[in-house]
Length: 302
Image (cartoon, rainbow, N blue to C red; front, side, top):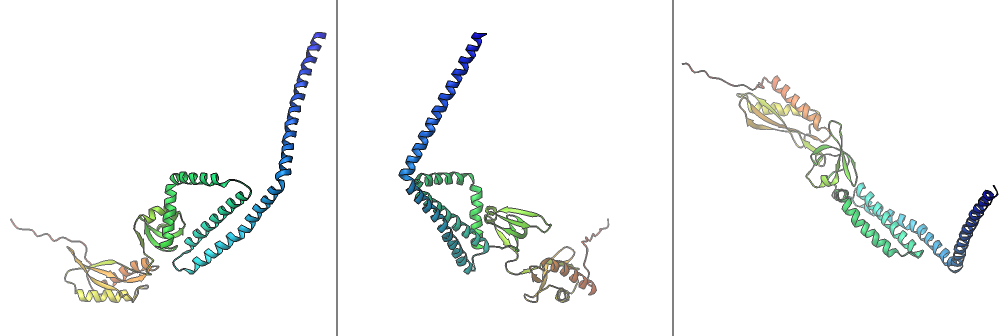
């Protein structure tokens, strides 16, 4: 029993000795670090404090400088009629981000940080990210070209990348369309700028093209005059340019007229429908036959 107690006492004594030794080493290391910190502060503390205050001052004052540059850029771009809101927003964003990047580099340099390797690493990182996001960068570049050339704007009815609809949103990465059947289609700008763009709204007026047929033997001059009179009564048909009615083709069972009134872009579809109804009713009232497709068959005896 006495031997067991002695063994336990020795074990506890050894553990206590090890803990005390470890604690003493940690305390010694902590004291050494603290003394080094005090020595560094005594030697460099004032200069570091001055540099830190200088870096803070650079950021605070630089903030107002960046805001002034952004405001000046926005005002300058606002004077140009060729620069739309999309391009103004993009340029102001670039000016702001570049200004803050320069401020941060200057502030770090004031604190004594070697910014050379940092700038070099950012360059390498930029190249890697460029390869990784080349499609997105392509859309961004295409968005910049759209903003510079503005082939369309929000509200225009267009065909881009094979999609037809009204432009409801335009940003640097994509163009958002609303189709005639109320579908939302987002088209990347690199697909938009890389293909033909049709803007139905840009010129303010559109020509409506419809075709109406009459039977052979009809007085074509009178039919043309009746069609023009009918078009003059259709709401939305413009007097300038004047509507046009002319023979388009001679088909198997009818003479086809091209009926071409003009309308504003907003009234296009209403005029397209109303013009066909008005001309058909006018022809019927004038006694003109609007023939169905027919085929004459001649039988030969024996």
